Every structure is written in C-alpha cells, then in structure tokens.
Length: 71
Image (tube, rainbow, N blue to C red; front, side):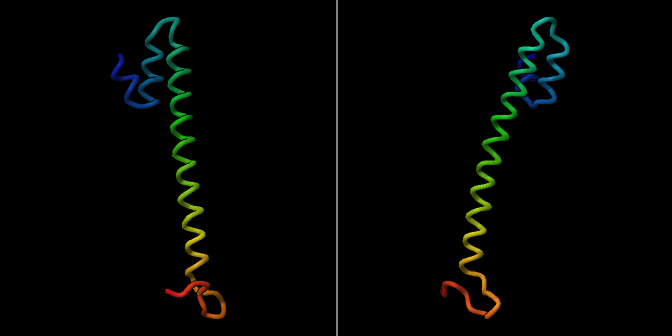
C-alpha cells in the first residue's frame, strides 16, 4: 500500500479508497503534496519564461532591424 501511495496522485487516491476510515488523511496528504509540487514547478517555469522574454527582448531585432544589444 505504501508504494502505491508514493507512486502518483492517482495511485494514492486509489489506495485511499481501499482504506477504511483513515482514507481521508491519505487523500488529503496526496492532494496537498501534488499541489506543493505543482506550485514549485510552475514557479520555476514562470522564472524561466520571464528570463527568456528578457533575453529575447534584448537580442531580437526591432522593427528598424537593430537589436538593443549587439554581440
């Protein structure tokens, strides 16, 4: 049961249905863990996207054909 709960959120919620009265604790912990991991992933993705936008705006040529910074 422990390995099924540690695999993925789907497996953890499926394992929680097999438990008796303690299924709500496992389901809550699985959902909370998934949300924390998703929040971290989206934060890193936002930082990478913002960094890429800054680099593109600095090195991409504008309408006049000149880049803000030349290499």
